[in-house]
Length: 341
View 1 (cartoon, rainbow, N blue to C red):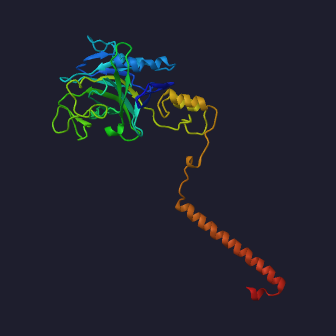
View 2 (view 1 turned 90 degrees about the horizontal axis):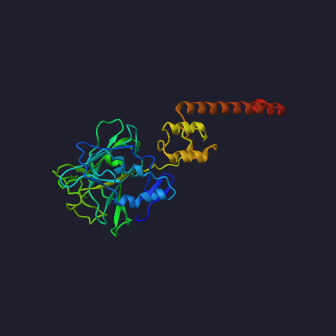
View 3 (view 1 turned 180 degrees about the horizontal axis):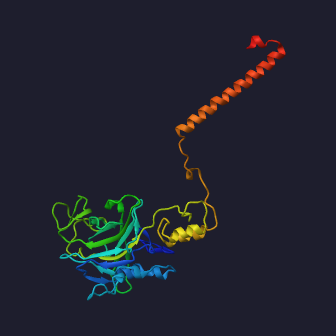
C-alpha cells in the first residue's frame, strides 16, 4: 500500500505495516569490528518525523541512527539511518531489549524493518534473531521488501522511498509463542548466496552452492548491482500480536486492579505495551461476558458414565416397585390380586 504514514496513540502504519513504538528495541549497538559506513537522515526525516507532528507520540529517538549516536567514533552519528557496509565488507548492528523478551512469534509477520532507498532500488540486507535464553543467533535470512512509500524531501526535487520488509519468526525456525531478545542486521556482499531458487531465503555467507539474491518486486527483479549493498537501515518496528484483548489479563472475568498488576509485571498479550494498558483503562470496572465458546466442557469420564448408568437402573427399579405396589392396591380393590401377579 502506497500512501502517507498514519498513527493512533503509540501504533503507527508505514508502508503497509502497523507497529507499536513502545515495543521497540531499547538498545542498538555495532557488532565488532564496527564496520559501519555512515549515517544518513534523508528519507527518514521526510517519512517518519511528520508522525510526531500529527498529534501522535512517535518517538524519533528510537530510529537506528539516533540509538547508535556516539557508539561509532569518526562517523557522522547525527542522522536517523545507518549505512551498514558496501561491496567489500559487512557492517552488523544488534538490536536488543536488555535481556528481556522483545518479540513474540504469532501468526503472520512479527516485526518490520525499514530501509531508505531510491525508487525501484532496494538494497540488500539480511536479518538474524536470537531466541530468548539462547546464546547463539539463527542463520541470517534475506527477504524481499514487501512495500514502499515514496516521499518528497523538504529540500531538492529528488524522490526517495522507505521500503518495508516484514519478518515472521517462524521463518527462523521458532515455534509459535516463542520469543526473541535480540536482532542482528547486516548488509549482503556480492559473494553471498541464498538457499532458495526464488532469490530469497537463508543466506549462505561468502558464496558456495546457492542462488544469487534478487531484488524482488520492489526492484527490477534481477540481481543487485554494485550500488545495492550499502543498505540504509532506518527503523525496526514490532508488530503487535493479533488479539481480542479485553484487559482481563488474569482471566477471572473482571476488569479490575489485579489486571493492572498483571500488565505491570509484563503478563499481558503485548508485554508492557501502551495499547494493552489502554484497553484495560477503557474497560475498567466491567465484566467479561462468557460465551459458549469461552468455557470448555470436558468429556465425561468412565467413572461418571458408570455412575449415571447405575443411577438410571436404580431409578427404573424404583419406578417398577411403585408400579407393582400400585397394581397390588388396584387388584386388592378389585379382588383379582392373585391373577394380576
